[in-house]
Image 1 (cartoon, one colour):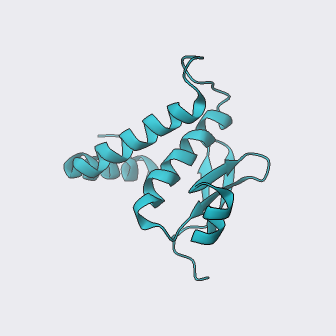
Image 2 (tube, one colour):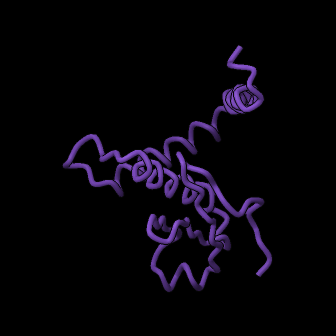
Length: 119
């Protein structure tokens, strides 16, 4: 299968996680669109369902962030899976529906990467 995502790894904190691309059949067999594994050091994602790629990737990144920074969900009555779903879907919606904010954010992040600060 030809790669569909333009990157093979993603860094979260001090960890580089491999991005494993699943077929729709693999995702169906696993019973999920994606999964984060701290043990295997990867995020696996079904890349053949375009309507779920972005939300699923951000969702698994939330799990990776929670794991990498040793955090637990703010409220024990709110399971991590629900917390990750709320945060990821909310972030994707905000970025999708606010293109000027998205452009602004990308510009500021680029400046930070270049060592130019946030001005």
